[in-house]
Structure formats: structure tokens, C-alpha cells
Length: 326
Image (cartoon, rainbow, N blue to C red; front, side, top):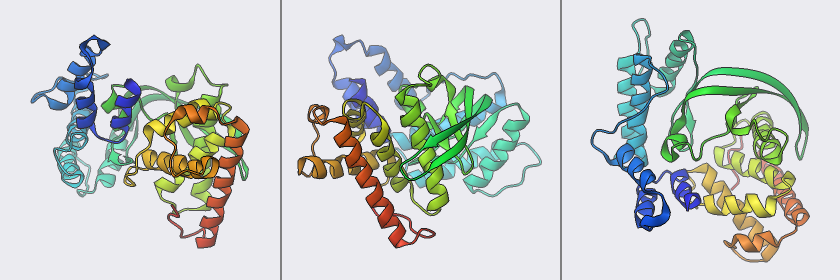
């Protein structure tokens, strides 16, 4: 049940997520969760909890929360909600910070202020919405990662003691959230998410190889759009993960959506579609039980073929300028 709920949230549609919750039988044990969604997204004066007593930080977080409420329930267009967010954040910037109403510029100033208060702050967009990650501690570990077309030595910063983890964590009450991301020079990992599985496939392939592929693609294809970046990184997961047929395909099918504006669900949709054509000779096979019957090696080699085909298409378009080929 929660997998379906989270699939709506991943697509940025809290209205459908809440409708789904309301449609469930009262005996499902989800009454508390229904009440949480009602308060967070549909109450006139929602009650929020914060993991800090700093009044200024709480005000900044509240501004983002109101933005999340607006875009996730479609009460405001994304552009309008971002303008309101920018205006709210400008008012909160301490004296001495000069900025425009550009959110990237505003978040650069916010990052400096958070640093001065003992926090790390990563702004920007986790497609399709904005929303920062704010944490207190991090530690660096070096890895060497094998990828389909190269090996890379990579620094991974394990982050902990979060007080905010962007919009998906907010939308799912922590049930789903980004496990980390790739910058131009290093990877950042949510420590709590992976510290118990650090030597298992969920970390080694679904996080480390996935994000390392982003890092490699930033170097090789500097203009590549998020939808292609996610497509390639998820194919890497399928190539190496020993439970690609039982775990990954079920997850990709659940997350899949044909709305190109949301790169994570759309890339899952394209992968499932391409593999359906390749393995089953059908346009789209949505039944996870059918994918469980596919041998790991067959799925792995098929994903690798799709990966190399995508690389060839990108290279033919011109590495320095290509944005997308899917």
C-alpha cells in the first residue's frame, strides 16, 4: 500500500496520494498517516515540527514548507510558488546580504549564513521541485567504483544529523527521500540511509554505482539533461545489482510515469519500456512477476546493451553539446 502511496508522491501529486489514502479501508492501520497528510497539506494552519530551536532557521524552513505545500497540491503553478518563495527568503536574509530575486543567488547567500551557524546547506532543484538539504555533520571516505565504461576513484561525503531533506522527504514523512547526490567533484550520501547496508547491493549499486555514473557523465557529457542522466544511472544499477529482476524492476515499474518533466519516474518508464521491447517483444510489460522470471544475467546484459547504445547515440550527437537522446 505504501509503495503505491509513495509512487504518487514521487510524481509530485499529493492530491492523488491523499485520495488513495482516503480510499483505503479503515482497518489498514493508516488512520494516523491520513491525519498527518490532512494536517500537513490541507489544513489552513498546519502544525510543523522542527529539529532546531534556532528561530531564523525555523523561519527559512517554514518558507520552504509553504512552497512544498503549494506545488505538491497544485494550488499554485511552480513559477508562482517559486516567486513567493524568493520573496519570503529575501525578507529573511540578514543585513549585509545583497541579492536579486533569483533563487540560485538567494540560496548561495543562505548557504553562507547556514555555514556561519554550524550547518551545511545544499540548495537547488531535486527535479521537478526546489528544496534544500540541511545537515550538521559529514565525513569523507574514498572509493574506487567500476562502471560499464570506466573505473573512477571517488570521494564520498557521508552526511548526518539532518534538519531538512528536500521535498520528497517532506511529501512522504521520510518514507522516501534522496539517498544522496553527485556534485561535480564528489558524492554526498545520507549516512542513516545506508550505514547498515554499506557492503550490500543497495549501497554498492543503487547508490554508489548510480551516483558515480552521474559523476562520470558530468565529465563526458556536460550538457546532459537529468532525464538522460537518470536513465543511464538506473541502467547501471540493473547491470550490477544481483536482484535486478526481483527488486529493481518492481521498484522501477512502481515509480514509472510518462511525464517527461519528472526525470526519475520518466527514466524508469523509458527503461521498463525499452526492456519490455527487448526481452518480451512487447511495448510495455507492467507485471513485476513476469520480470521475476527473467534471469539476472539476461536482464543485466540487456541493460548493458541499452547503456552502450545510449552512449553511442550521445557521442554521435557531440559530447560537448548533447542534451538528450530519449
